[in-house]
Amino acid sequence: MSSIRITGIMSGMDTDQMIKDLMKAESLRLDKVKQDKQYVQWQQESYRDIINQMKGFQSTFFDVLKPSTNLTSASSFSKFSYGITSGGVESSAVSITASATAAKAVTINSIGQLATKDTWTGASTGVRGIETVGLDLTELGTSDLEINISIGSNAKTIKLTNAETTGLDATALAEALNTKIKAAFGADYSNVVSVEGSEVKFDFAGSEIKILEASNPESIAALGITSGVSSYGYKTKGIGELFFNSTGIDLASVKINGSTISLSATDTIDSMNKKLNDAAAGFEIKYNSLSDSFSMFSTKEGSANNVVLDDANTSAFMGKLFNVADPTTVQAGGKNAQLTINDVPVIQSSNSFLLDGITFDLKAKSTDQIDITVAVNTESIVDNIRNFVTEYNKMIDTISTKLTEKRDYDYKPLTDEQRESLSEEEIERWEERAKLGNMRSASELSTFLTQLRNAIIEPISGVGISLNDIGISSSSYQDRGKLTINEDKLKLSLDNNFDEVVNLFSAQSSVNYTDSANRNTRNSENGIGNRFNDILRDYVRTTRDTNGNKGILIIKAGIENDTSVVQNDISKRITTYDTRLESLAEYLASREDYYYNMFSKMESALSQMQSQGDSMMSMLGGGA
Image (cartoon, rainbow, N blue to C red; front, side, top):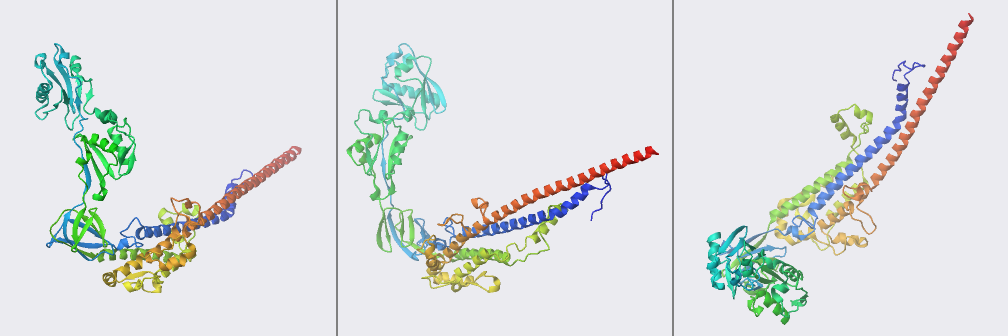
């Protein structure tokens, strides 16, 4: 018992310490509830660690987005090495990928022709550039022809004296301007000005030209242009102004490959192309600013995918864009791939095609024979299965250890007072011991392990081999169901019984996972991969089933980044502890108030007695 210091005003007692000692006894229940809550929180943490390990295992080996390791699909076994040679030398004329059903050897006798897309290539449209309108040099009067011209980021003043312009026609003017421009900008800038009938045109591929007014307005008037005009002015103009004024072409009814596309005269070249391409009608059209021309091509190779203009209106429309009277004259037409495989002539509309389990991708024509061999890449498949067994054993070991771990009752969660007296290292060591056994004999985990063992042992409908037959087995019951792998036996099975090994892991039932009424049928038809995946989904699924339930362990303990983080059975238990702690805290506060009030009354009574005694002594003393 703590010693009592005589410091009370009247009683001479250390009432604060006495109350603290009294409250220690009262607080034992509070500490007990805190310890129970902490232990349950540790249980939740342990469950969540196991959930994360299960989900990591599931993500690595049963995720459709990871085909190279996904054991629920034959794709993880589609690991092959290829030989593609011609005359004993590696050939680049074709590349291949193989599936589990691929032929082991194929001969391409020759590749006579590659498949091509239907391609239409138009002539220059003439929309790019700056063309004079009503060129009349007499507008200059006695003035010189003077213009500021910019080509790209460079600007120069070009000047022809009045004497130099007198009597010039369009051809002579173009020649004179080109001479001046070349002198100002350099020899590379030749033929910036060309002749268009009785007009001249400023244009330079790859660079924007602008013409600005110089010192006299007569120059701009003589050329019939406006100041600031650009060779890229076509970009903001509508196709009606650029191509279709007074043509009678119905832009609202352009019909290509059976699709009708509605255009408007106010559409720019860019917006027109977007509308045409967005129609997804099996073609794509582009405008090339360097060549100032349109091109169109089919989206697929082969003659069956040629672009078809459905009527005369559409032919006239394309004729204007391609700047030809008959647009079909600029159509190349798609070609089919022509080759001979195993002495059989083969026609394919695409350079990439699937045949007998092999996807061929033709790269070049070849008159030489190409020999193709396909072999299973056993090492890569064994690596994947070895990793599967390793991670499976880690998971089994973690869960089995938790299930058999004994609780050390000498180590309970620390109270606040105990933590204050220990170092961080001491607290860590203590809590390692105190956490032991918090999942001992957990029924959900025991059932989980039993289901995994059954998934391995039970035969698979239609598959004549087991894991044991290919060198994967559980060595002993004492090993808690962990697997061992005989890699030599596994490699031999892959070499001699490849298809059965693939089915052993990846066989998939026609019964849906959500069909609980036929779960036994699904389980009997599923391979090891899909059986494991079903079990893992049952336990760590964050989606809800037809009954509105998530996975068994998710319901139990919840997981981060999901609503179950607070909506789970253990969190509900923790909430009840919080409620009890609140009630106990209120009770302790009232008890402490009671004790202080009690001692206060005692001090008051003693004070009153002291006063009365003093008064009596005073009276007695006065009488003497």
